[in-house]
Image (cartoon, rainbow, N blue to C red):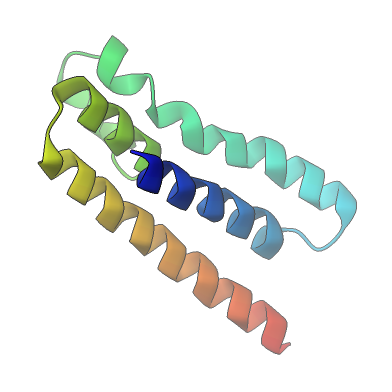
Length: 98
């Protein structure tokens, strides 16, 4: 779980860096980046398959793995986090290239 949590922190940092161009935008993006944590309460409060609507958030899979103690959810969460990381890093490199 610590691995997925640290990858989530890197994703939030990449979001802030890639999506903002000045300090004011950075503060706004920081508040929006906190929305990526909305996946945590979903498995605990939503019992039906509607909880998978937030499955694109890595934080959802962390909570799902904690709830069910299943390695499958950990690996799905890692894959989802790596997809986020790939696209944000690609956007960052494009931004740095000019």
